[in-house]
Length: 94
Image (cartoon, rainbow, N blue to C red; front, side):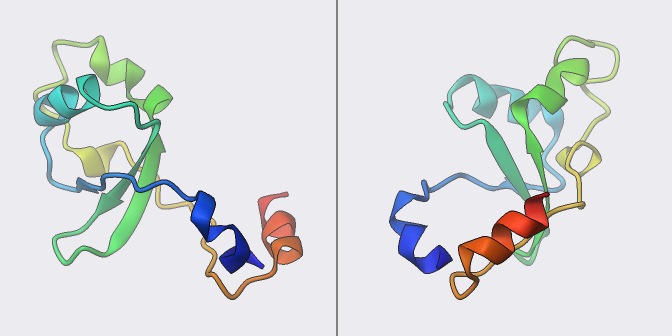
């Protein structure tokens, strides 16, 4: 069961959807986090992005001031709960 592995889950900082990229860039330089959940103003999870997805913006001074984090996050996610069995989770990933 997923609940049996919850002790292995690390706490991550979520990113507000309207956070300007320039603000995120500062946070990114200070973290070892590789995946960033994106949340709406009501704290609802709306997407996620890996650090690799920011490369195109990170090295583009022309666009980095125009981007907010909801522009980068993807909403195509696979969700699970502690009550799910690991076999079902694995099938969803394939």
